[in-house]
Amino acid sequence: MESPTAGTAARSRPTLWTARGLYALATLFMLFDAAGKIFIAPGVADAFHRQGMPLSLAPVIAALLLVLTALYVIPRTSIFGAVLLTGYFGGACACNLRAGFSAFETLFPVIFGVIVWIPIYLLNERVRSLIPIQRV
Image 1 (cartoon, rainbow, N blue to C red):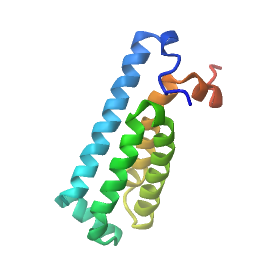
Image 2: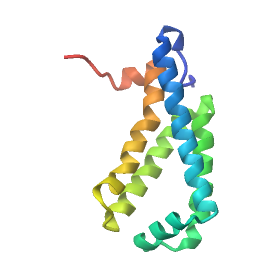
Image 3: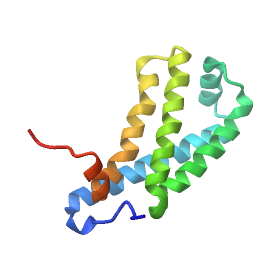
């Protein structure tokens, strides 16, 4: 399998740095989120309570997120990691929707899922060929 950065030579410097910045943003956010779940930050406890989810699941979800993040940051497995993170964020969206969270809280995982995919899209020609975005 080709790494997500395959074909970056044809990409402009701004595109490369935008992709790197978004990779870093996504990775740091996921690590921050996992840490909040491991240490059961007050905001995490509140969210779990509002979702009706047992707080004992927080470390388990954190471990899952750390594994998926590791897959995402390893170039050979980043596309696989992004696919799995898409499922993770979809589950978060469903949990938030079911719990009656605000529109922003419900859609934030979807927005973040898009942010996870943008660097892969920018850097990988094969992904771009699967999802062609054409100018009108």
